[in-house]
Amino acid sequence: MTNEVMANFNMKGGKGKLAFTKLHLFTVVTESVQRTTEEIEANIAAAVAFCLKYAPNSVGGGRKKTFIKDFFEIAF
Image (cartoon, rainbow, N blue to C red):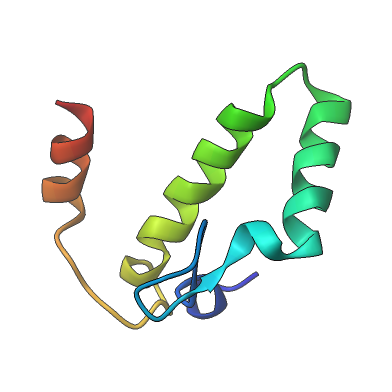
């Protein structure tokens, strides 16, 4: 999935975006990761949410925002 496409999604929908969790693709990703690792669904969802959150700031995402500022707000 390209950054441009991911920029139109978040996990739950809202704020003008579509809900990624309602797509069959979310189930496919979750089950694929669980089959190859022992990861729980909550951790997989958190990783997907992180990717979706920063997709607009990535190449082809369409929006530039201070990644470092957001990173430190999350991490600390």
